[in-house]
Image (cartoon, rainbow over the protein chains, first blue to last red):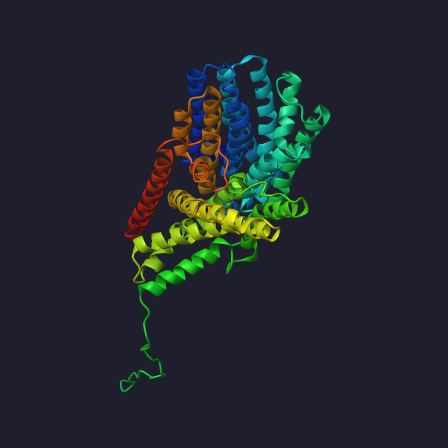
Length: 233
Length: 291
């Protein structure tokens, strides 16, 4: 890890307009959960806000924004060559950038899911969602960082993964759960609270999350090691 | 030395004195190029991958549905036109969100807009043409699978008189949907010039808000307070489309059915949102173009 790169990545993330989009998402989630909780007579009415909106949509969107903010703009305008010209290991660059994206995803995304879950009803189910969001947030941030280093269209590819693969295909085909980061998180959350589903088994969920996280960060570093600048398409 | 005199050689350059086509052909060629660029045609191979991948994913289920209708003789389509579009709304939205920056952001970000506006083409007309290209691209994207459903269904022996009115009504709704989606995504891409930022902002506005509306409508139908559900449906183009599709029998499904004058309100809302988006888009281009 490199302190200067950490600082610069954090500035790139916090200093821009996109930071407000990053924070606005969980805030809107929490606000709507409060609203539904206040208006509905059914005490469980607000849980869908966590299980259908907060966890499968807001958390990955926050992770995509965070991961693409720490690496995307530099790749986009080509200024990453100045960073890569420094005598710092490319893997150290990738790890430093990931740590910033990861921290932002956990603080903004997972915390948002936790607060929404606490508002929706709390109890052990909220703890389960927190664990699920921590695991999935970690894995998502590594995957999206790898995508940002791999392609200019990282945001769209990431969205296709989340919306089409995990969302659309996952809704029709139950087997998709074995290759779905969100479902791995839910499986780990199930170990804390049995209110959550158990789509796969726990060792697979833990192992797969670990492999994707470590592999993603390593792959991002590897891509930076053999980085080719191309023009805007 | 002093007797050296300069000579301008006539090497045969000639002025153009052929016919000059007016603004109309300028707009037309800009529109066609924009429409082609939305699908990556005339651009690099890599920019064709995404639009055609999404188009393929959006059309494949329609082919499967037609296959099912062919082998098991249904009397009607198991998933009709508007309901099908509602099923693939993620794909349509992603297409709109991903391709709007291609048409709108790049000219503004790289300032190539000044080159366009150096021609006798007003910024307002430029903005409207860009919107028209995007809306047509989205319309093509939605028409293809519904056309597959319609033609395939007819070939599989569905009744022509039954299917045609439903198909035509769905087509009319698709025009409204494409106009609104292109307005919203185009406006967002004109403000957020970074591609990734624009895409995520469009997704938030279209998918996350649609998800929220859906949850609110489910709760409302559970609690039996239909007015709040109908009101919530106004906030997303997709629920506008789905609500109108059920009200006008265009083969749709919706959580909340519209009563009384709500279909008119839905249509009016769609038109107001569309007009506001295009007006703001024009204002943005006029402002940037005058800098």
